[in-house]
Length: 54
Image 1 (cartoon, rainbow, N blue to C red):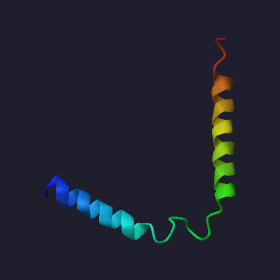
Image 2 (image 1 turned 180 degrees about the vertical axis):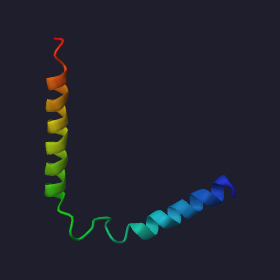
Image 3 (image 1 turned 45 degrees about the vertical axis):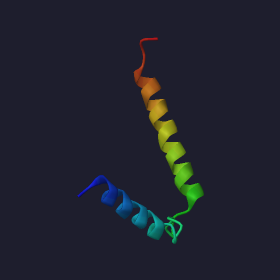
């Protein structure tokens, strides 16, 4: 398979996938973003608790 045919297939796949918007109907972006922020802040807090050498 050549690079040109692979690129053409990827362009076709991307064009077909853009029709739906990419979002799942039951996925709330604010809830997902808030959950990700909470997890990252929790990981930051855990990391700072283990860093006692300062």
